[in-house]
Image 1 (tube, rainbow, N blue to C red):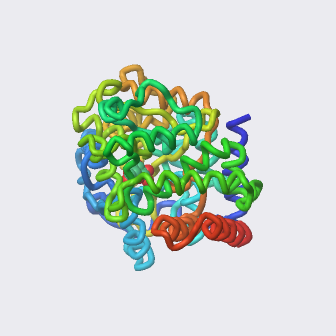
Image 2: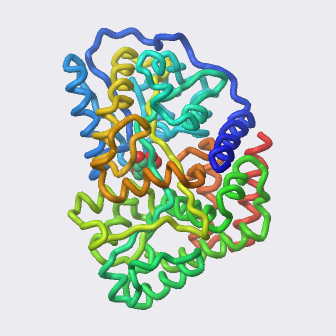
Length: 426
Ligand code: GAL
């Protein structure tokens, strides 16, 4: 049932986006005998770079004759990379492969005819049955598939600093029952003299917004926000936006200058009590040698229903890639059992493949594996699963206006409703 909601969303969303099958020839555009494979990501620093390094190590083992060329552009969630990529694609200068989120984000590239169909590789590498069926469905457009997933992340996780909570008189083992209870705890933490909830620049605020919307609306209504089935003007959305505003008021005031790493660093340093972020954050805690359950904790933000806020990183074969065979080699490595396990261990994600042994994965990832298998699935807005890029950009602008005080809840809600209207009728 819950899975069906998600599938319905992906199918309807892709159809609503009016996708035409584009793309070029089977083999990629440019010809090159180069051994270099240019890989474009935003995994430039810290634990994200460690994840990329794990993939590169596997790639060098799998393809010793090829040379990985790192074209990463720093900035969480691709905040700088996506614009840079757009310029390169428009200038006819694609990398051999680039990172993009599975889901509606891909529609922009597909509509623009910038991606090759890689469904033949699913056959060649035996991927169709290795990935969850709903993920393959999400990626399939008119019987073509335009990317290969490397991993699955969860977006709606609350991270806690245990000592800071205890000092504020909050029992770190008690999970707040709903968003109001969570806000009460954040207020209590803030009253103890730390930042209640750390957050960074606009995309991290949108990550917070989606977590609040998921928890307050529950999965069916949240998922309906992206298909036109849920009314953005409804009172449940008003409540969620009020909650979002209450939480923003409890965050650090320098948020707009910070990336997600800075916001999680505040937790690591003990200057903030809570942070809401995707589960790449756990890799930062692990890198800082914090001990799960002792130094830090986590729980999904919930209004009663357990929801897995879904996103998946994937890699593409751009039309005109100078080294399409090199790109296919990269796609082979990132989709292999070894590639997926090594990457997710370093990155805090879970493998997209279901046929790998995850028994040795750390405790946090075990919770994500269980949740992904059992809970309702809701697509992430901030990370390209729920909407095409244009819709996300509009929501980001409206959110920035709201969090900088340029609009109130009513104005923000009107704007979000108008954005939904224009993007679903486009
Ligand atoms: C997401 C991406 C993750 C992680 C995060 C922070 O969009 O899917 O892998 O990199 O951004 O940058």
